Image (cartoon, rainbow, N blue to C red; front, side, top):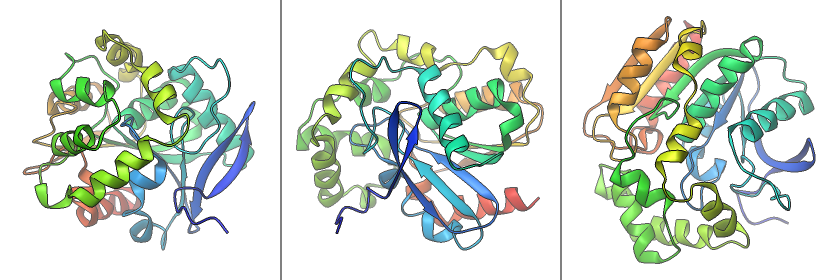
Length: 273
């Protein structure tokens, strides 16, 4: 029996298999994780699963190049690949339309989905989201430039979270070991090579297209975010017609981990509106 909670279900998406979590029932939410080293859908969302799955069907895939989804030979990672995987994933599970919750990199993916496939998206929830241009931060440069060591992972967790109590050595050890899984660092280091400003631009949707998004959108950000500046969410708020913005003080990049209950309540209330 599989002892790793990160590994759940597997489904064919295009030419490769995607590892994903599928819990609860009801209205479908797809949760799209961020792009940190050793990340997986489980690492990003496991604290939220028990809070949302009693009311919703929660789907959380590992995007290709991350987690426990296949890493096809010779694949060139980029937004087009991730959008196609998300659509293939929905098609494989016969999900016509879903609410999208995107964290950081996942927020950029959710935005790209709303631009390219608006008919497949209900509401958008963007958390510490990328998707617009901004000057590369020290924090994001460190995240994308990560080389595996316990010390480096510990530094990253300090950058990610405002609350030092949640980024203990156990979490650092777990995330470090995860980043050392076979193939993880190879795919990760190939995704966002220096100069890493290119990675920011590669995830940005055209602002003219973002203005065309009509989906009801909730934007969430931690004021002390050192990875994605809070200004990106202010910019998205101005661009998206049907948007609302929630900013948490004393909170870093990991709203869903630092403010799990409040984050889940916001999502639930927004989806019920």
